[in-house]
Length: 183
Figure (tube, helix red, strand yellow):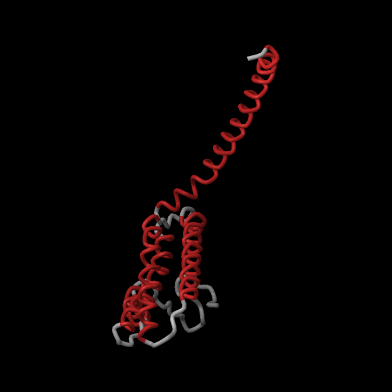
């Protein structure tokens, strides 16, 4: 090494080390800020972890049975349309996951309803499962239709029957308990 390069190295090396330290400190600051900011959100998504795993399975099953059902209907199957619809479903599913997580943060935690995001995602998954089942039975040659009201209708009325009751009014149109006029 020549004396000139030794002098340049001696002069510039501490300056470069200081700049690298500043860059590292900035990265640590940004990383710490992101960790503090995103940790509550990631905690909320922990309860939805199984839905993240269920996503690719449901999409693959729906795509498979959708293609087979289209074959039974003698429709022309376009790969681009199938991929586009699958990607659209993926994006919709991720949006529902984000919405369920946000509802859990905004309404679930303050009102102590920790199961709220799971209920939202269970409804979304049941709709996707309906699509898979309808496509499967269409592929097998059976035409079926889901009627969710019949499934939950009578049970829901029975459950609410004990919770909701009518309050009778006396002859003057006042509520029995409070004595105020009914609205």
